[in-house]
Length: 395
Image 1: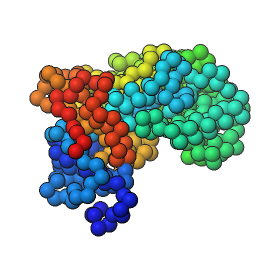
Image 2 (image 1 turned 120 degrees about the vertical axis):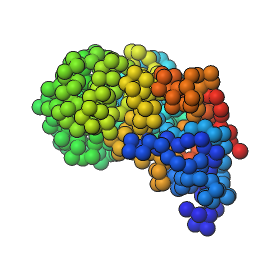
Image 3 (image 1 turned 45 degrees about the vertical axis):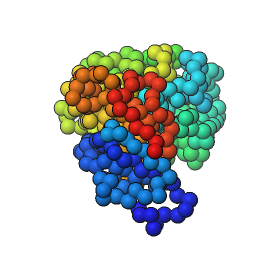
Image 4 (image 1 turned 135 degrees about the horizontal axis):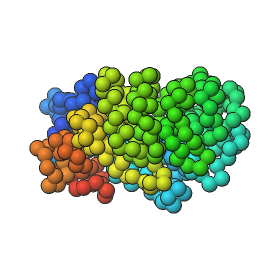
């Protein structure tokens, strides 16, 4: 889009002097260029500044030769209301995750609400309310996709239509409620899918009171869209079951921070062995008994890259483009038309490695210098990551 196509009320963001660009796409994880332009919160142009029209910018960011990446997506969180979690009696946990590079979160169920209603009228009301308050309020700008009801016995097809008509697009983890049998879960997942509601299933041993073991047979029969925490939340299934799940369906393979790290590496390696790495997505499964992990997604990227022998630029795709495609989001990939959700980051000060990617492949975390959501700066130098070697600035 050129200036002559713009109106006086449009907002133009220019990010210049970019060192390298991570695209979020497995098929081309690194992009050529040193400049990105966004208009009204959407990417309009990517390339070299000398070939681009950077005039009349509302905001200009000098990236200072650092790295630009899509904002990270946490595929598995358990919010309750606003930026507060009673699970850990903690406020501003979402803001803290923003300082870990996360710009989008996906609820796997608002299960930690004290007195969570389990009757059908109550659970539908809670899901609709959750969807509404996060639609109307973004803590620190973070996009929280919430309103994810947990399945309970007695739900009928009309209930899923009602939820969909009200704007609910997600199911909470199948298995955290009274529905645990594969046959019942499968019917409800089909109803949800019919009305455009995406599903995630708990995988592994019980995590909270009321949950139970969900093994490979139940996961395969239920056929949910996402195999939630395939590496356990917290307790993983046996190796042969994890491998079977990867090999026997085409659903999302979600690896989480609050799970079994060795099992997560096994799932990722199996996905590569069957040439389906595009199915690998990342989450934290927090807040939980393990707490809140503001750097959880970055730690998973470093873990899978360093111990899984995967190039860091590929590991970044697990937390960006892969998740965006699996979750049908308009963020997570740097290309024209997508939401202008970015993080600007660099190699941590005094960390080993020739550059940021090599440092991450050695297991080190990068430093985040700025985050941008919908074309607006939402945070500056991270208070949680190690300090970056170089920092961007708003001109």
